[in-house]
Image 1 (cartoon, helix red, strand yellow):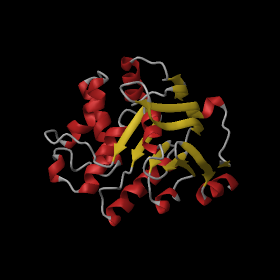
Image 2 (tube, helix red, strand yellow):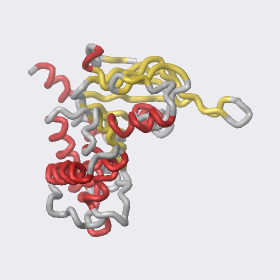
Image 3 (tube, helix red, strand yellow):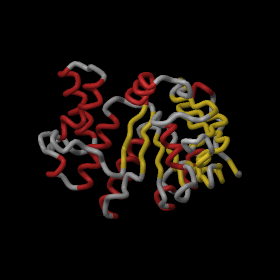
Length: 248
């Protein structure tokens, strides 16, 4: 494995994976697949990281662990200072709600709800008062360019607008990290570029972003690329953009 990734101080870390393995077993207890094998990765505040790899490389498993959607078989996974490896489902849910923002390829919006209602959902589950929910939701929708679409429903929006709603929903809780899983996969190339430009802007404002992508040109927009192969880290290197940021 080659690596020129940074070694941030513990105070700067948003994600820290140490000795992570994830093994899936058959009902009889025999090993079905070893999805991740002894993964060590630190991601510091403000980084923009791409996770790449072929199908079956372990990138989705790694994203699920980072997002507290799954727990490792062994090793330590700290998210914003909290080790999730032995957390209860209730505590994992709290970490997801407060520290992680998710953006998916398929948008995952609720068709029966309006734009503003979709974005309010995470705040509702955190018992945020109604007026505070509405204020924060309107502010973030204006930030992503949808201040004039608050009362629309998802089927009244373009694909790019739906993804902006999904990004607003991910940001409304002020998460420590935004996880984006192939966020332009369901969009045409022009709309995809608009979404990537929005993510670039959010990163420039200081947001930590971790993105799964198969597209080399998208990965080059990031500061750093982690490529997985057969459950191992094949390399973890800074892109030319990331190198330029260091030199400034």
